[in-house]
Length: 229
Length: 229
DNA sequence: TATACCATACTACCATACAAGTCAAGCTAC
DNA sequence: GTAGCTTGACTTGTATGGTAGTATGGTATA
Image (cartoon, rainbow over all chains, first blue to last red; front, side, top):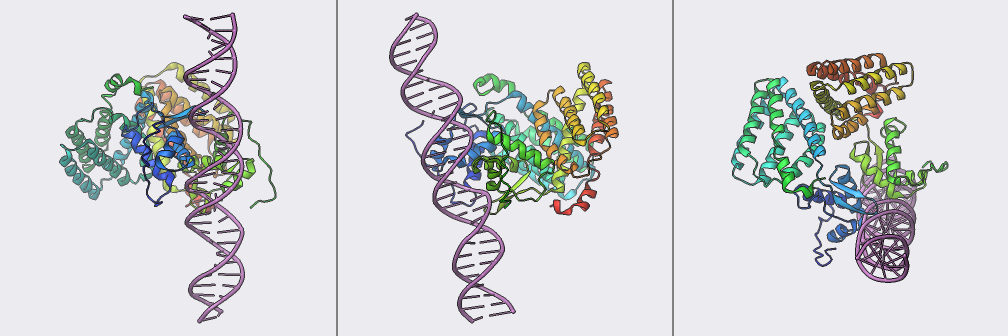
């Protein structure tokens, strides 16, 4: 369907494989809610839209389904996964557990070079305060990744990324005005606790930060029940 | 390669998809070290062995590569992933963080029916003491999954499963004589702390339990350096 | 009018064919 | 003898064809 507009979105000429490019494009589209939860998205349709064959599309679908972003029902169709409240809450739970332990680790042996880097990021985050939600989300992701890599847990970050995908998808539904200033304050609290070598306070600050992220989830579910399972 | 013995391993006649069956079979083979780290494993070869076409094999490979169990190098070949020490240690780190929070949650609101279930499992674990490593690993997995599901974190368990795969692969290399009796004692300590509603002790017991799992990893790496990255 | 049935147009699944990159053995030129 | 090229046998990546299962809408029947 959408049989008229064959707008032939073009992919880069093979710097990386077609599958990888398509995977990234679809993943971003789903998280940004450019593709709405529950939307149908068949292999053939996507293949035609991107001017490629069905096989790479299918392979991109597999990875997205494994991440819980697509649901493929054999012989029936493939759909953007509806948002499951338990799944999102569990993703937040996992992320909190992992990042709490990461900052605990950092505070046990404070690295002042890392702290300086983080403080620099805080300043740059302040500059975004009036800016776009997208820009802040990017800065936020860099901040959290810096913590993980600073603790030498780069592989653990991969898990957080997967959990974050579930969470971000919901956040992008919530009309985009999260309290940037407060979030930055929470970031600062984490950094300060690390700098002072106070693991308990660092952990607590991170938990508070991550627990506050999905507070308006019930509201969103009431506003858009059709997006939820 | 292995051109003679085409022993045609047969898959079930389509109760579930060919891809899913093959995925499970290969995953088990890798974790059990039936397929050694670094071993070559081409799409065509596996397809022939199972009497199916290359496409389903390829799709199973994608999922296994996403889990870090295979490494596919374009135009070069596909290999069982060598064991990366940082990756394994980070997997343990993530698992500890998640399961520590799970038992903390359970101890905050002890469910005596769950405790009874767990105590029953402890008894059954005792019966295995002289038995096979495989049997104990299965019982161990059930125990940990019961904790996760008891805390209402069934989705979080999916993450643990992925981390466990990395860890179990190493454990199966270590000549199989882990101290079963001690591990059961540690399980009991967790259950007791939950029953008594002591979150701090439950957390601590779980962390001790999981930290003790990979102690002989350096020994294994010395014994079989060719399996490591 | 309500319901069982059936043709048809989808879907994802699997098989097969072709394309393109990689690597190593062996030949050629020097 | 050796460096460098050619060639061919691999590999995974992509395209296309055919199959079986599913939903849907129209039609005949009670």
